[in-house]
Length: 302
Ligand SMILES: [Mg+2]
Image 1 (tube, rainbow, N blue to C red):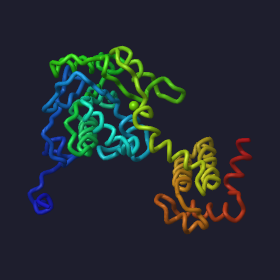
Image 2 (cartoon, helix red, strand yellow):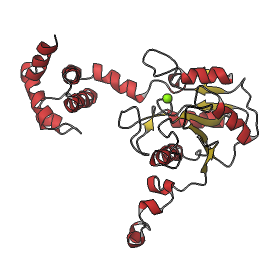
Image 3 (cartoon, helix red, strand yellow):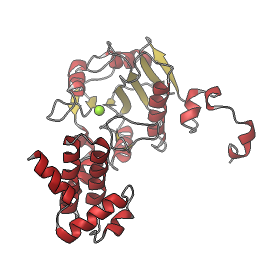
Image 4 (spheres, rainbow, N blue to C red):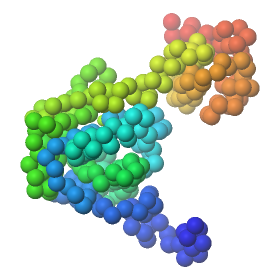
């Protein structure tokens, strides 16, 4: 309210501190740049020997937009709804939660827009944990001794708190475990290099909301319709039409996750992100169980 009444006096975003630009949440914590390449989120109470270490992306959170990389400081959602309560449980159990994240997109631009976004995004995530946002975080910006699987961030955590963690009762959790489809094994190797028990996000929180939604796409009331659009998206990608590929894949997700049976293109067009072009194809599919464009592309790429 105060900010709204103050519009005349409002400075340009670039005259404000960088964190104020992206997040208006008040906070006592601050970020410090260490060794020119790793950001550390400083909190009031950093003592504790029992560490529950977590990776950030695809572990505590996913992007809201569904992409691998966050687009804004607000582009996050919990890995699944169980995350906040599980973290609170760990804290109640005497664990100190610490985030160790590789943020290679920052590189040496430590005062840049990307760095500001990464820090504000972590603050936003932790700020959403009512009553327990007093959580440390470390973000490695470059390919150096701080980047997982190297152990620099862990050593910095111990150095900055002045406390040696008890590795027997601490653990580290991350999604990069070298499984088929994983982008790396950095998290698993980081845990091994530090000497910690390694856990997957699913071990602690259960299946991700993303995985549950993807499973619903295959079993929901519109799974066959969604399948047609998914295939259309794949074939448009082969056809090198990226915008259409993205449009149809997104339509496939939306239709597949809709809990009620779609019975007309008009009804489909009421769903977010579905326009006339997709609506017409929905009508075509409902009337004929085929889509002429899909048949055409199938013939082309058979
Ligand atoms: Mg990750």
